[in-house]
Amino acid sequence: MSRKFISHPLITMLVVFIIVFMPNYHMIWADESSSLPSKQARQLSEAVEALYRDVVDGNITKVRLETERIEILFTSSSFQGLTEVEGIHALAECIVEVKIATAQATLQPELWLQAIAKLRLAADSLSNRQQPLWHQYYKVVREDLSRMQSQLNLNDKEGLKEAYDSLQTHYELIRPAIVIQKKPFEVNMIDSWISYAGGVTTTITSKPETIRSMISQGEEHFNTLFGKKKDESAFAPQIQYNTSNKGIWLGAIFILAILSYVGYRKYRGEQSSMKALPPPKL
Image (cartoon, rainbow, N blue to C red; front, side, top):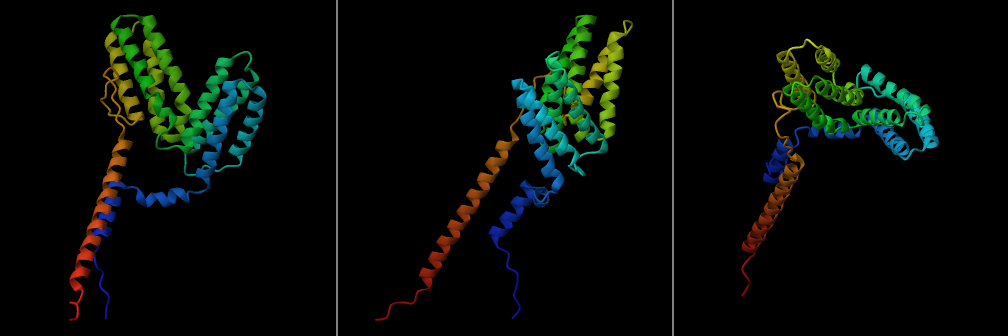
């Protein structure tokens, strides 16, 4: 007797849930088995976090030891598939920058902190693709662009230049992290705009219309870079939605539905078994 496949409602519900709410479910096991590069990237990020704390504490001796350990981790690791060649070079430059800044830490502590912050963002972007730390700078960039627009409206050339300098500083801080995660053409697009904006803001003869257009272009470029709507204005209130709560609620509803279904089936089964009992013998 041949066996037939019988569709079970519970299995159907489970399949639908996985397909609808976990579109990347087929990648989960691949990510966890995830190659050695992912594990090495996490180890590097953890080491950099420890280094960051030592820099904040001002412990130069520990910083030097941690930096040596990070160099060994970096040179002995393979980050193939996690970033492009440009990303590897950017990360290497960050490590070298920290070494140089550490040697001058007592003379230029601000540059020391800036160097370790840059390395921290870069290492995190290598191991954290979904919610990297550098994404938190979107609000900072928006504020810089907003200041540029405000200073333009006030016809304050000096204020405009200061706002641009602030934007450039923040961009340079997150740039290695961006290079690690983005394609070269995306990085080149922002680099070109930064260079162009620098020329426009420092040129005395720049017309207000030209500057306004330049700022608008910057908005579009940075919105694209951070994965926002292309036409989202830097001057509108920023509203953030917590999508993780939505997933939690959907999961809870799904589990509740399964429990309800199981309870219902159990109840029907008990009713059926009661009906199937033979009548008592007299």
